[in-house]
Image 1 (tube, rainbow, N blue to C red):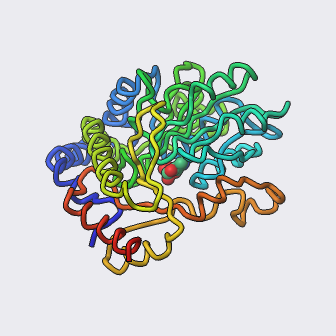
Image 2: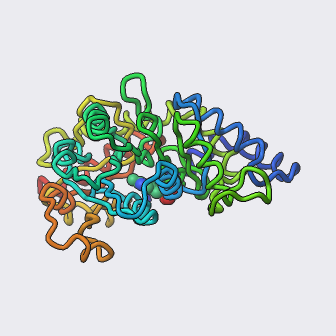
Amino acid sequence: MIPMVNLKAQYAEIKDEVERGLAETIENCSFILGPNVQAFEKEAADYLGVKHAIGVGSGTDALHLALIAEGIGAGDEVITTAFTFIATAEAIKYVGATPIFVDIDPRTYNISPEAIEAAITPKTKAIMPVHLFGQPADMTEIVQLCEQYNLKLIEDACQSFGARINDKQSGAIGHAGGYSFFPSKNLGAFGDGGLVVTNSDETAAKIKQLRNHGSDVRYYHDVIGYNSRLDEMQAVILRAKLKRIDQYNKARRHVAHLYSELMADLPLITPYEDGLGEHVYHQYVLLSDRRDDILKALQDKQIGCAIYYPVPLHQQNVFKEECAGLSLPVTEAVSRTCFALPICPFLEDATIRDIVGIIRGVLTA
Ligand SMILES: *Cc1c(COP(=O)(O)O)cnc(C)c1O
């Protein structure tokens, strides 16, 4: 059995460090916003090159709180992609704003800057790009649009921790960025967790209040906030993994490049790197008209595989009515043929060769 992500292999490497940290936390009983959350926030801010990093309950919460802190609310339009996980759009809905879904680039599957510009109206308040599958969106173009039209830029970096764009980090370029530490993400905890980053003191102060019941001083509440703190135990695990994140992402790139090399002669579309930023391969996603046959062959051999994403957001039941009549041809075409293969830092070359062998068998039979 080959899982999509091999979390067990990763754990073996950090076991001692994690067990020590967890035992200490249990001894100290400092369970909420304790020393490890504080240390992790400092370490993450340093790594990401930002002034503030604030640990929150999940990636969804990170995006939600970032939108509130940036003043996005009822009546506002936020331009984003429909080819993403639902949480991107959920966060926009939570604040009462309207997600405006636009089409993607046919090669990278990231949001298209031209499509963004065409969708800007007087109601547009923000752009929320997603660095999909670990490849940074075209931030040069998107930053320029935000400046030109005076829009907030909130990055969904839930799949791209550690993906650089020249000397900057994805997620750390806009007014605020949100990361997810869901266990299967590039930087994953052992439960839910998230992070908001910003260079604005004001935004950081608001997020700190919002994650903790609208309070700076215990039992004094300035706004209606939330209970959304990064858990102390999760921070222990994240600190151990953050030290190794570059190594993990490098290993992911190796896996992806080997897959692509071995499949170069096959009639399918392997991931395209546009070179605008470094792809860290949260997922290895490819396109094939024979997707169903390939997935069946992999499943028969107990090899993990998945479809990200089978139904774009504008066609989901929850958005069907709101988006009636909206057509996103590239998004729709990609969602019909895309599928993902197992990827993680610990996938061995021999396994990659076996997986490619199965796919080759289907396509050359
Ligand atoms: C995982 C993910 C989220 C949400 O993160 P959670 O931590 O699961 O709440 C948001 N956006 C994208 C693109 C994601 O992949």
